[in-house]
Amino acid sequence: MLKLFGILLVLSASWGYAGALVAQLNRRKKHLFDCGEMLELLMGEIRYGKTPLREAFLQTASRLEGCFGEILNEIAEKIAKNNYRSLELVWKECFESRQKELGFTKEEMEVVKNIGKNLGYLDIQTQMAHLTMYQKQMEGFLEQEEKTSKEKKKLYRSLSMVAGVMVILLLV
Amino acid sequence: MDGGKDVEQIIQIFPMHLRKYLEGEGILEKNVEEIRIRIGQPVLLLGASGERTVPGMEDYRISEEDLRQMVSYISQCSIYAFDDEISKGFLTLKGGHRVGIAGQAVTREGKVHTIRPITFLNIRIAHQIYGCAGDLADWLQTDGIFQNTLILSAPGGGKTTMLRDLVRILSDGRKGVPGLKVGLVDERSEIAGCRNGVPQNKVGKRTDVLDCCPKAEGMMMLVRSMSPQILAVDEIGSREDFEAVTYALNCGCAVFGTMHCSSIRELMDKPFWKEPGNRYLFSRYVVLEIEEGVRRFQVYNGKLEKLC
Image (spheres, rainbow over the protein chains, first blue to last red):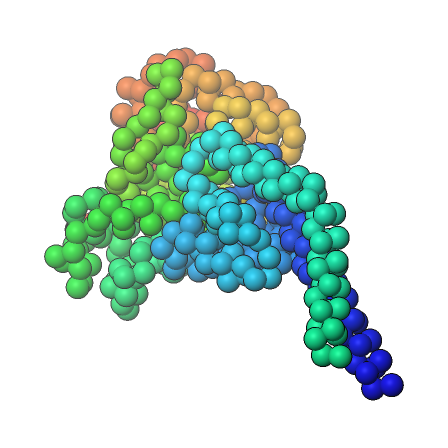
């Protein structure tokens, strides 16, 4: 009876672990989508209203849910204090501090951090061109993720279950 | 009454390591009208009492990095949002302070497109003097109706300060005198000192401001859209400006304007005066003068007869 209880416990733990990995995958996919949405809204603010970045960040943040809105609010707050060395550094620091939560790969994270590099000192056309470039890159990551996520999910589930069965075989 | 200076906004545009020198008591408050910033040069404070350096910063020279940071703070890291202002050579800070800029001009089709890099700054501290036009207002009306008025003075003579206070007084009204709807065309953001369209200086509760708009076009727009009783505009001078003034007068507005001109004699030498039609546009001319640090005014009627 105790053995059966143990087997069930290991199997459910393996299933749970697979579920956590899948949830992480879904979260990352959502964050890639949110990042694209953030850039779209930012471009709208800049293109139509010529809104200064601080206001543009606040406006965009008010339309976003989740961590991107929080990050933009944090950047806007830091800009308002006028005690930063450069916007690039503020942007980089704020996104780096949320790296774990975002769940991005190293390559994706580099792109997100680089967005801040070209903000603020350019004319409106070049600013738009740069943001569009980063938006396309994020879209590329999202497309890639959508293509592979089904397989990844299957793989996570089956590997976790196999690992669970192995553990059971070793222990029993 | 001196409206005072909100110098905190100015200190905030300096790099962190320089702010402590400017935060000292009275450094920017007293008699400072301009702060001059130039790469490789010391920070200079200019005022009625002359030119001086900032205590403690006598040997400090402004670096490229200092100026880059200052431009970033002034533009809120958003040069694109201020490219029109930059091409005109100035930016306005919260609090109504104006930052004149110079450096390398980038031209397109013969017109200044932008200035890059910006290597010189002239921070003009906004200075409101509430009530400075209080005595003047009475001289500008006949039977309770305000007359078209042109305020004249040499550069730095206080035309804008006087016009701003006049706008505020007419808009808010005075004891026994109801306020009027005032339309203000502020092409260089000097009068209302708008930041994102919001006046930073007190221009009265019945004043509508058209900020950063060409004067002639702005006057026409305000007359059509806001039905002002008084139209105020700074530094008129071109043919288009006077055509717009004529248009406003025909629509029943009284126009208050300013012009660079130090005396009535100089006015008579201006192309404006030589155009016969323009002589009948204004019924009051106010000449401002500074004598031994005290601002005085003289008022003339449309025939250039002295009233006071």
